[in-house]
Length: 418
Image (tube, rainbow, N blue to C red):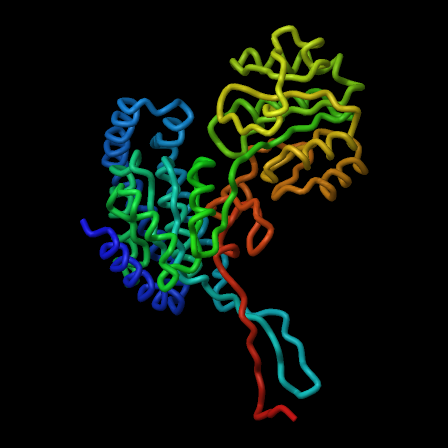
């Protein structure tokens, strides 16, 4: 295959489709989403079979458990994909929305209109659900998408792509509005991230190595997060039962997600009474604890943490732990070591909660809730195309609004500038 020629053809088709999608009405876009959702449920047996082919190959290639977890789909997750699409269909269509109108002394009106970004290139590893989440959000937001999933999910992604094209065609929309690259050749990624004439923004989802490569080599704007070193801070005014539930869910529900807690901070005033019990719970889940000197003195099973541990996204059954003097030290530690993804405080003190929300510099900051809620579906976005830890354009879970831009519009009645 001539990769350059192949990618140019995909880019040309995507650009043409993006112009049609930008003017597509909400009814057609919603019809496509509903059709794809129904097709997912109809074809669940075929999708699970395709996924098994990918899993068998992944195990033979020695992929680790975290990657296998991301790669796996089930009847429940297929239902979740379909529900996500239906939730997106119910959301207000942001395209064409006009706001912020003001009259100027000249008599003209100045306002803003929300418009699609155009063509979005999405590069991701494992997670077949990204194919559906990305397709759904791009369709509803009037964009075209070029999707490049990992080679480990090739069978499942192609099966999903077929259903997406079916849904677009059934709604009278261009099937090239969502294209899934059919080659695992890495050169395709190199072409995609440099096709300035055809692609408006790149969204990478995957490991730190993939995202660093994309960020360094792309000639197109990138919406990204490198890793998810998420913290749970247990304050000296925390409710113990809440702390136990929140930490357990944040760390142990799933190990391989970017919103899983990787670091535990606890106030010194309650460390002796709470930390051993919290540590026993983590140990029962098979979690290795790497802690500071005070942690190791209180928790017999804890290992000594290195400075690097406090910066690490493990995606594994490991958590770092540090005893801190209180809120001030917790905020300083988080802002220094965090990846600016998601942080949570457990406290009954309203003033401390407000300070944590205001002063912690991350894309999602939570009070008395699990870090696992940092997700587009849980935030009511229908789904997400990724989570951005950047500060420009989009931050946090990127849903419909994050895939749009604003342009100024001017309404006049024959005015000319003096």
